[in-house]
Picture: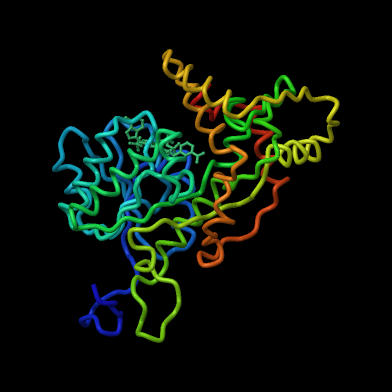
Length: 338
Ligand SMILES: NC(=O)c1ccc[n+]([C@@H]2O[C@H](COP(=O)([O-])OP(=O)(O)OC[C@H]3O[C@@H](n4cnc5c(N)ncnc54)[C@H](OP(=O)(O)O)[C@@H]3O)[C@@H](O)[C@H]2O)c1
């Protein structure tokens, strides 16, 4: 399709999104997205939430109840919405995302941000090995085939404070026992993003103008990301870097910690076996281990580049967020993994 320009649109055309909807208003990443959209102050926010949801929406957010067993409720809730942001629990039935995508098409929602929030977009083998790629691709293809909405994926990699604190199966740290398992040498660097950085990325993306004003306008636009990923990151760090940061933040010594090394491939295989024997933590193990392979698959900022600047994202301080993680590890009330 030929490039479109805002200056050539009919009178009354708005080049900025005014109404966005989110699934997961009170979710782990969803609440940060909503907070930042409200902070930007450019859009009305609608929360699509289940009738029996315990999620609370902040002031200024309109709540619309939906029933995943009644498709019309979702279509009705999406009337007038220009972007649907899906942040849905990994435990939610997978067909729920298909229902949201179908409803977005039925309600002519132009933009859908599917439930991604993971690794780099361009690595088919990584996607297969982590068991997430083919499914995620399926949803994107479905959006394209319906032909009503465009998608934009958010690649933020693992959430830093969350992954450091949540379980030794994630970034390898057991704070209670002062033990860390390094995958291989522990020196492979991966991209990782804090929850607030991910929230800002989505909010600032949706605040971009939709189309360039005219052929001279080179400013970033939403249309420039149509059916593509944004790649954002807070830090490019290894497990070794994380341990150094933990030591700085806690004032501890390396000798206080028990450091174990595990071969990456062996650990990945043990994760697959755990999963096959019905232990869902095996998925967490295989996922995190695979991204830390020493081939650099977890480092997309060098291979693809980041959109941090285009999206106006600030530089963050590693130790500040390591401190957040050590506090989170001490009080686990937030953790869905127990
Ligand atoms: N990068 C990372 O480190 C990382 C880590 C974990 C997850 N993720 C990704 O981020 C996405 C969002 O994860 P999250 O942790 O932010 O989600 P979450 O907090 O676990 O859940 C978000 C929302 O999902 C909604 N939901 C709909 N159906 C549900 C069901 N059957 N059971 C439970 N909740 C349901 C709930 O909203 P209502 O109650 O309002 O209906 C809930 O608040 C995930 O799907 C995954 O792709 C990334």
